[in-house]
Image (cartoon, rainbow, N blue to C red; front, side, top):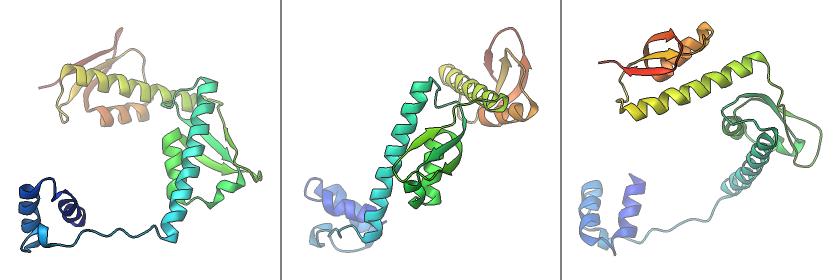
Length: 193
């Protein structure tokens, strides 16, 4: 509500009739043109800290992506952990989760290094490789669904070339709306209904 009202005030000189109508409907006041121009407060101390923390997050993600590129590991492939310097301990749990999501990492660990350091554990075990295959398969299925013009809620029949563990089959069915899943000689997606 606040965003729309502020936007109406800002756009009123350029779009007088439309903003007038929207503003009156939202506020019940006489006119957007009689309202005060919006004032913007300077960033508070908390906001300034969040901005600095986000700069640090962006730097960590850039460094992590660079390490992935050097190791020739796609972002779709999950990795076990990332080791960050002690400087990064100031980051909130939400920002650490953002790093994990952006880099597709399961765990964040801190070392004693004072400076900013980022080290990815690029060793891949069978479980991580299976998760990576699942993500790649889901991408292929979603691309094929799009190519076939499937509705968002439309179920599909799927044929894959190699069998998956039951937990991965369940995840694949859930994420891509698979009704019938079979293993066959060639990858195939068919729309149901």
